Image (tube, rainbow, N blue to C red; front, side):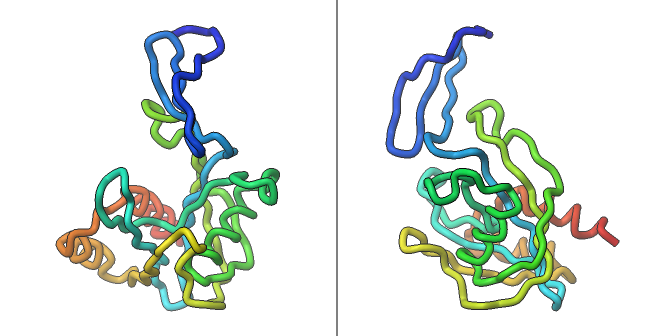
Length: 176
């Protein structure tokens, strides 16, 4: 792989396409990474979101998530701060604490983006959620007891299941 500075071969408002040697990949124009949030209510429900995702042409079931540093107001936020902000915006849940469970490349063959899986605790529901004016998010509270069947039912209803949910469940189930 070339050690030279990557060549910009395309750029939009949110994404930039780069080429380094023979390798083509994308990066976000304004981002310091992403957060994917693991949040469980006092009633032992995993907080999940459903939304339309144009690239996969379907509705997905995902962990609440967001982009870090995607605006000047959030340019220097930590993964923990981003997770608390995004969880409240998308789901209406405010958390009292957040810590990074793991971090690493998101899809290393496609993008330079790095993701943080962040556990948020101390949940209190302040509003129904739904995201900002550009989003149309449905919030789901999936019971941990029987969650595999719950997810399978959502998949049979046509939702595409984002695999990070299963990474989140690993951490939830091994917390003790």
